[in-house]
Image: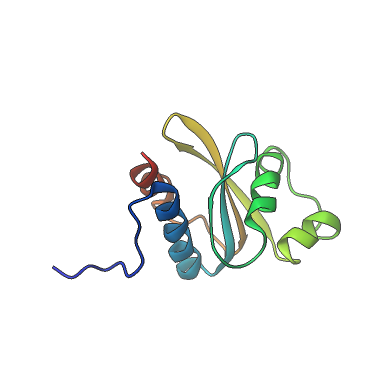
Length: 117
């Protein structure tokens, strides 16, 4: 059997970051950040906008529509659109912040639960 993954890790957080890198590439997202309910970064992509800043913004942006892409948000997203999706990862409520791209990646919640569970 051929292994389809080129980059892999046995460390769950690192594996989640590698998974988000692959999801971002497939979905044309500039960056993805998985945040806990307090806005702390759990995992994120290795390229693109600052994923720690995206994680901090995620809980706030999930509660209310994000403001226009100027000011602080524009600096964090580099002017690109921000999308935030709530996720249940294990027993925790989390958020996935996405910069760029159009749609929520399919299978995301199940995959992250498998990786981080």
